Length: 273
Length: 177
Image (tube, rainbow over all chains, first blue to last red; front, top):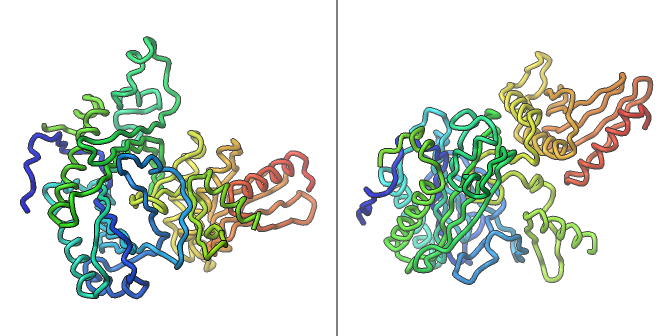
């Protein structure tokens, strides 16, 4: 399926995105068990030579009436569950697998890394890896993959010193923090930590925006982290429908990002359209 | 059972709950999941960041210091000491996050020759520290100017660290245990 025409979407030469996440949640594969992680790893170990075992991701439906997403929940499990990361040699891409999840991440590992862009690389790479996983499940008679939800997340980091030096100056990074228009006066911000969410068009899922101060553990750099996540249900389980939903989710994420960040920051990130 | 449920309830409030169950048996997964500020444990993002409980200069400097210590290599002291591993780094960031909520600034943060990271305090000749070990253990120690040191294992929860920090604070203020 050709990549849709996204020429009208905002595009930046130097966007602050440090991670892109494309994921599919599906009905749990009952036959999937611990050995299958190893079997799948055999297939991809040339590309993804290292692994890490983590606790499983929880399910959080973004269906129209589901208001519990993002809230804590208790999950009763009848068998131990794990999630496995398979990480590429250059550390820039990883695949996360569990019995009801496939997630593909691209991440920036060096400040000089150029964002590979969704249309140019990331979408294609997701499709390639997803197809491989799907084939593995079929070939090993592990059941039918029935997707229930897709996810697109963009994690952006805006380091202190790049457009803002004090928390007060974050008011000029985010359009929604224009305090003069909000209150008619503008005392200095001391800290910025916000989140909001809304349903996307045609009830195709929900968009969540979260911004909070963070410190990168690798280098101790202070950043304001902005995460924009779209989640929703694809029309059906076909790969083409999953990709279509991911395109839709990504479009929402990108438009929201451009909408809540200021023109001054767009200049810094070299917006080209 | 009651204690287990209380623990689970506390984890619920922290937004970080997962309960494994066989029939009516509910218990949280062990301390390896603490600290909860580590986002990647529970989200699809793999970003390795710390979300500070409070924005303070010394906390940012402390995380930077841990990043520096994380670059040490084995035998950094030329006496065969282990370099601080990822467990010790993660543990020390979380202890520091708890300390920042208490506005309890350490005097120094250094690699430990025992293997791990040492978050130290000192006042009037008295010494105390948190020892974030490569093994994943968290210890606290107090050492009076003229007395025997005491070391104990700290429970790896917010409450556990807060209690130990308060003990250390009281010790440094009074110089007695």
